[in-house]
Length: 477
Ligand SMILES: NC(=O)C1=CN([C@@H]2O[C@H](COP(=O)(O)OP(=O)(O)OC[C@H]3O[C@@H](n4cnc5c(N)ncnc54)[C@H](OP(=O)(O)O)[C@@H]3O)[C@@H](O)[C@H]2O)[C@@H](O)CC1
Ligand SMILES: [K+]
Image 1 (cartoon, helix red, strand yellow):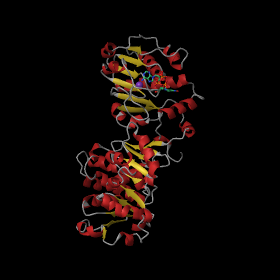
Image 2 (cartoon, helix red, strand yellow):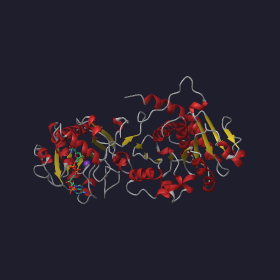
Image 3 (cartoon, protein in one colour):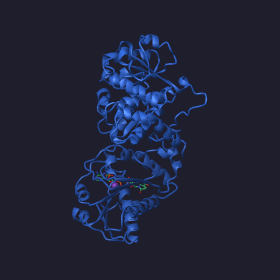
Image 4 (cartoon, protein in one colour):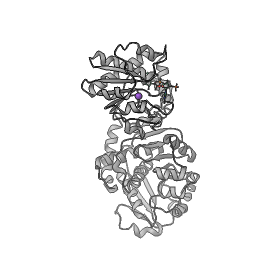
């Protein structure tokens, strides 16, 4: 897939394997390994004062990186020993670099790990293929501090899940580009400080693998910039369906849409109109039947779900689809579509949290990115699975992982606010996947600005500044 910037690419272990393979046509694997091990040694030197180090080496190339790191640290004068879980296969690249480490070898045992100040975990990386077993867990558990090469052993690079056991590292050094497991939970919590180091692989090799996953940052998408001739309709009109039971949710979404830059926000409240009359003066409340409101073709973008009961969604969602409107579905829409995802066909963007996602599509189990991608295909809509790492998948296969956020967003109303933000960007004409990605980032940025104890209403006051910041960053190379 083209058009998205290379610098944000995230590569699955398989894709990274293909990149290594392509790169090895120009650079021998032993040279890549040399570069990787040297990068680790230099990162360790910046990370800590000289100390006693034990490098735990597995049988594959991750172990190979470990032997190289051990040699560089020894050359710097650090006391370094190696403990091999299994010797590398004779004749392999790892065996050839292992032969160049002339320091001490010690048993792969907990006492050895406990004896030193720092353990370098080069047991398994991209090649982890099953749950890890003893003695690896006991040896890692005995370490005082751990630097992981590529990935803490036991974390699945593709999904971030734990395969049997994982020990949280203090520092993780990976190469070329991050892997999904570095951003997804629980893997993300096991990295400690995280560094991505260059090992001489050219970014041009990315052209040879079809990159489909990116880190969500400004520049992955571009926000529209206000032109001199902007007016409220060109900035975008957001309409919301609202009900009587929970007017607060619709009002939160409406306000955040306005704060994100929508030119006009209207609430289709019907009989519930009195519940909204005391709201902000700049909000327009419509009492007319939905059929009349849909005659106005400038009202293209509709938010359907926040504050709605399933029976209210039933009344409006199919009409919006029949009127060919761009629909952002949230909250009540997922109660209405529980166990029946096909009901949501016709929506442009869905923004479920984990519970809502499970209700509609089933629990994502061990591979959330795959589940979100499948959901997006199933309903032919962009799906945003909100969480500490939000996953934003498009039916065409593109996926972004967002870690630009804080746990402070776990507060009532924050999801309604996100809906309004994305609604405003859709109304401004952004393509749905990009609007969803940009909305998630702006929402996270507003939360970072608002501090740890924010309430949903506080986010509104930071959305303008968040948009300004994204606009500045999106042009940086
Ligand atoms: N390729 C390149 O050019 C470059 C790659 N680089 C480095 O290479 C790393 C990837 O190397 P890799 O592919 O050799 O995989 P790696 O993680 O070492 O493990 C594979 C071995 O472990 C075994 N094994 C797996 N799971 C197991 C378990 N649970 N319990 C027991 N055994 C298990 C597995 O056995 P098998 O599954 O075949 O039976 C196989 O023997 C990557 O992370 C990066 O650090 C850098 O040097 C830059 C250049
Ligand atoms: K490792």
